[in-house]
Amino acid sequence: LSKLPDELSLDPQDWDAFRTTAHAALDQAIEFLKTVRQRPVWQPVPAQVRKAISEPAPQLGSSLDEVYKQFRETILPYPTGNIHPRFFGWVHGAGLANAIVAEMLAATMNANCGGRDHAAIYVEQAVLTWFKELFKFPSTSSGLLVSGSSMANLVGICVARNSHADANVRSAGLQNYSRPLVTYASSETHESVVRAVEVLGLGSASLRKIPVRADFTMDVQALREALKADRLAGAEPFCVIASAGTVNTAAIDPLDELASLCQQEGLWFHVDGAFGALAYLTDTMRPRLKGLERADSLAFDFHKWAQVQYDAGCILVRRGDLHRAAFSMRPAYLEIMPRALGGGENWPADYGPELSRGFRALKVWFAFKELGVQKIAQIVEQNCQQARYLGQRILREPSLELLAPVSMNIICFRFRPEGLSADALDRLNSDIVADVQEAGIAAPSTTRILNRLAIRVNITNHRTRRNDLDILVDAVLYKGQDRLAAANAGDPERK
Ligand SMILES: *Cc1c(COP(=O)(O)O)cnc(C)c1O
Image (tube, rainbow, N blue to C red):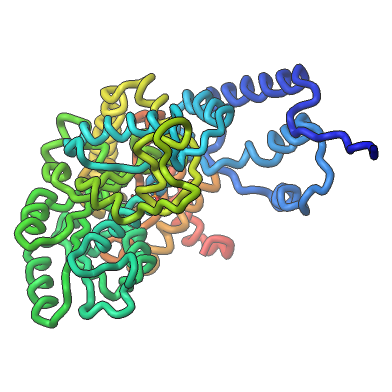
């Protein structure tokens, strides 16, 4: 008998050594988070570090200690910055300490959450049930945790498309569909909505961008007219996509009015509530989001205003049967078993495009179990108060200009000294944002409001204090005046 080779396992050969490294990593992770305020918000990744990270595939391994050491030196010091109290860019959540534990435990279980009968599936169902109730959706509605609102918008609009009468999209596609299918959203809608209609084969030209009013919310009268014009022209409207918190200014479309209009017109009502839907959890903001509970599908994120770690978003669909009908596939190898592991009723794979999925629900479950809905809602409330505080400070500063009304948690403003052309102002404000980021002081981002470059401050951050907003304003003023002085002195470095 020939000798069989020794068999290999990838588990640590020395569990005690593994334990020592793992404990050190955990301790240092906790220390890193605890001291975040003492570090710059962001710093660029130096060229030699980028080089070190992009080495070729290691044919032979090294010790865990070695790998961890490289992580500590080349990766950990250069985060996006969103865990920092003065990160105000885009719409990023700050994350929670408890996720350090939750993510470690999810990795330990390494559950495959496509389906089958095990605890992780029930955790996801529990989280979905919480949010169906919080958003006043019926118990017969369905949902799925996804990577974020981009995917949630895609899934929601896909169910809308597939449920649309006569379309028979699952087998026939849109190859021979007789009339153009048309969707509607405001001109302030997020690009992920555009991408969703592209991916779904509807074409971005079929998405009508409805103009907004002075407060950046959808002009419903303009929507009515567009619907009429499209029908006259032989097109087939099927879906309206409202924003509950636009990405530029946190404007809330008139959800209740749009829900009624969709009901009258037989249209699917999808709400993109990526961050803004969370404001529905607060008593003060809920009235402004009235109508959200009437959505046929609702997309929102846990990783933004709910502070859960990336990535975690969610889609809820009012008609669970339509949601399932849009995605369910049961080939022989996924046939449901009457008992044991192949059983269980709600397989997430029946509700979206993915089969294998991680245990995303655990960090959401940890976040809400430890903190409670009320405390997370308090942070939403606090961030809105902080936004109003910042708005008032900007109004008091003669060289600053507020560019949009403060709706919830986003402020758009600019440094506006006398005597500069519109283009020069745009360049100056863009430079100020880059200066403030590079100095590591704060991280606002930019956008355009009525085509003028704005310094955009988004507050979805439980670590932010009012004083951090003052530090930001002081830095903008300082950098702005510094640049003006340099330009006046003819400094060639600072044009
Ligand atoms: C962030 C955002 C999205 C996209 O969500 P992701 O989680 O980044 O995929 C969609 N809509 C709005 C309004 C957003 O703010």
